[in-house]
Length: 240
Image (cartoon, rainbow, N blue to C red; front, side, top):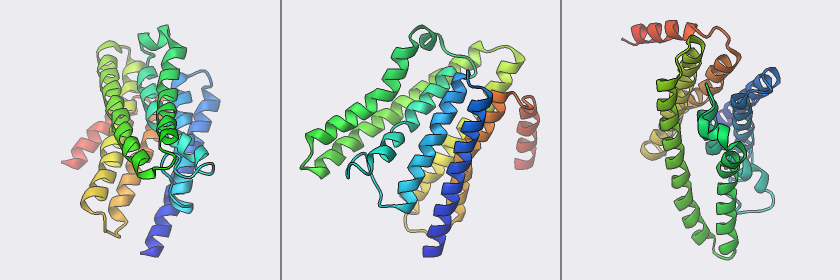
């Protein structure tokens, strides 16, 4: 069991480094692209999130300051960065173009303020703080789902040019992989198989998470965009 857990920790860290490096490379190649900014933020977030989770005592939104603050602050940026990505790719939404600073501040500052306020109000009551934290986090996840769904529907209805449509398909493939294979696999493992020591399900979940940066890198850099239709057709054929 110990060897499996150590192997999982190493692979997760390697995957996080892969995510981070893709974010850095795409950002350097497309420094003016808002989606490249979001991808870089998500990559940095995954890297910071993987270190305390695998190689130090676990943290959960500032229970042990100051050591956990850098890691947990980046953890809070995962969902805002995904929301920002949905709002800017393949085309920035009108609301973001009209109020760019306000939208970014609302996305990224709301949650650290909420969690830090809860922490300050429960300095001597960690269990009370955790109850508030676990009440705040589902709100963020629900908001992420709503923003993502509305943005995807809007892009599907408004993006008509061939390049934009292909970029949208690559983003859609990455998001579905991240949500259904990555997050969905994690939920299944956590709630239905909490005692399992097998690495198979966990490996599939990890692959699901890290297909997102690969798909986004292709979409942002516009590298072999139109191969997405061939990949979808072959996936459906082989799946059947």
